[in-house]
Length: 310
Image (cartoon, rainbow, N blue to C red; front, side):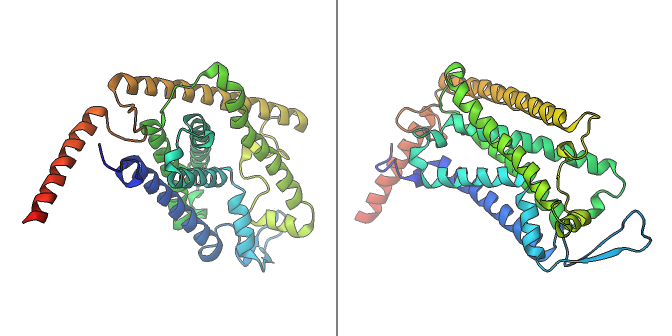
């Protein structure tokens, strides 16, 4: 087809991954900048809070607002998933020729990332619905926070999912053989986050300084369904822990099996249509399209040679 067809700049999929990497990078950088240095999304240097028994607001001063805003931002499940996805896209862009040759760049690992991103989208719309039902709920957010939250929590994961299922399903996944490893990895990060968020809450409420920090705006638990100090269900906390874990293990498992089934169906469709190319597994084009492109390339090369001889 091309004399140097292994070069990344001949493979449209590389440009798609590069484009996605840039989108994730810019959105994460802008979010970090506006959150910590520009708009102080969660904590101002001077913050006011009303207590139940006070008629006047209590003034609380914080000398390290950039640090606490960064800590708050990085404690979100959605931000952590976006960072993990960005690292994957950056690796897939740099090591493009190793895609589907190593596990971390395989269809199997992409399915795990898609599963985490799907949960992120669900949590985002759950939070958005709650805010819309509360009078004045959106007024607590500045413009940069609303726009960048929409980009990082919805637009970026949707585009990433589109990329994976447009060109990422390069091979069939044997569910029986892969379920143990892949499903374990799928559940590993959410379980680690579960214990992390509990530990973070305990540290925040450990002394008066952190308790005041929690009282102003930054809660020890970001999501009300993860507020283990005040469970949504009227059950003892240990039981709520167990029910919470069981529910999300089942949810993640259902999503993983569903995504794996979809991935296999897409790959089978590509095989039937001739979109899986033997010697160039990274091409966006079918075999027929590559033949046309090859013919045009040869003609352009001949014209180039003719102009050199003029």
